[in-house]
Image 1: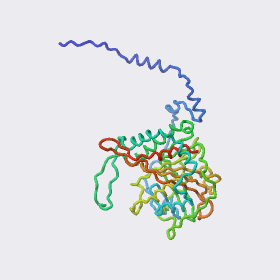
Image 2: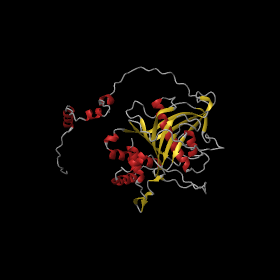
Image 3: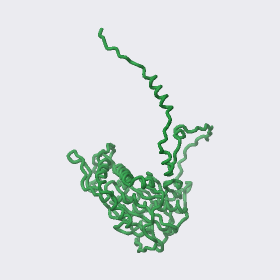
Image 4: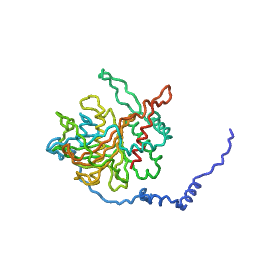
Amino acid sequence: MKLTQILCKQHMGRFIRRHWFIQSNRTVLEDGAEIALKERGIQVMDPQEILKPKIVHERLEFAKPLRKVVPKNDETHEDWHDSPCLMYGDNDLLLEGLPQARLLTKAIQIQDQLPERVETLVKDCPEDVNDLVLRSISTSNLFDAHQELLPKLKDPERPAWNYPRFLGITSARKSFNLLHKFLQLCESISGPKVAYTRSIIERGIVSVPIEKDLDFFQFNLTIDLAVNSGSPLTPFAEKGIDQEMPNLYPLNQNISLRKENIYKIRNMYPISWDHPKPHVHTILIHHDPVEVKNLTELPTRETQILARNMLKAFSAAASCARRRFGDSIEDLPEPVTVQCIQTEGKTFHFSVFQLNTLNLNGTEGTKNYWWTSPRLNLYDKAEYFDGKPLIDGYNPEVFKRIFAFYNNN
């Protein structure tokens, strides 16, 4: 028989229970966190109200379920309207691009420059932040372990040829990761004085019905990321700037918009007005070249991408104005300004939309303003070369403008 060493074992359950009993009776020390949060207007709640909410037992009676009846897409549908509505959604493109968008929104375009106030803030970005920006690019484009089936590759000269499918990081995931990291970096650099006045929401939905020149439009759009503030942005220019509007003759300004008879008229704003930071400040939108395309399968033009940017900024400003001044407002007592950043993960486009009026009839009278700057590449290449991560052609001007938009008041 083999002799083994006798182990002196003890049952630790009694000691653990005793330890938990003693620690549960400890007095919670006041560290001043509750007072600091209340001074900043942040609500403090007892965790027991959330972890153990009061349950009221009520007996609910439901009617017997009926067989689901699919409504027909005709006059018998409950949302049918005799007059059609011209719809514009997330993946729609205007055939004539920017000139058509300017006619729909009655906007003046100020090209190749941002407002002077924003250009001044661009110079205030610290120079030592470039290493953190490069790290954000690497973690979003190279070091993310999430893998999905990438879109199918197509060759215009051989449309029937099937390329093999590859796994990798989708452009939407790269873009969202990068924007989140840039916003977090802006919060860290700006400090609590600015960060406490900002809030971020994701996937906000805006819906704006507009009557223009005897036609009825409705913009149903999704704002991928929105930075809200406690006070509205100060207008960049006074009313009174005039500019000749584009002429699409013989085309109509409604060309390529979808006509639908089944729709709901609704004004939607992505955040409650009771929120301490209800004003839209900056919107960040992702352009997916696979999803956003022409119905005619023609190549997407840059003017169409810019028009999508403009209409999303207009819709965000219009929904905020109606939430602020009322659904029937036309001549705004105060302009509503929205900053917009559009990207597919590599190329960034910056613009500012100032909504002066919602009376979009005709081409005369008060007009809206849209400042736009040339598109900037954040980098040229972000890939593995000889098994090593490589970022080539980094442009520091992109983050400087994001930082300027975040700090603008």
